[in-house]
Amino acid sequence: MSGYTGQRSKSDGFLAKRFVLVDVICFISQMAGAGVQVSTSTSLQKIGAKIVLGGLNFQVLTFAFFVDVAWRFHVRLNRNLIVLRVLW
Image (cartoon, rainbow, N blue to C red; front, side, top):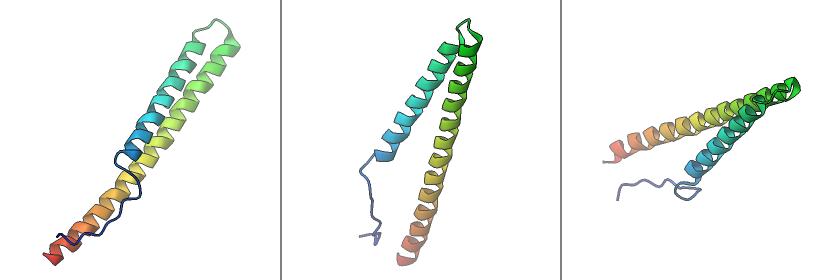
């Protein structure tokens, strides 16, 4: 017995599946915006640019959330490893 009593609030892969899903949604929205930009209408090109920027902004926010989750995991893992070293 290692003495680790950490609890998991979600099943395996819950966050990974969500991050992949959001990444795919961002990519599709960027492709859709690029497709709209190909049109000959200037107003549609501007709308397409806004759609692409919206997709990029959403992807940056998602990445920032991912970095935050990874950082918290890293800190908790290191904290528990220090406790395990003392217990052994």
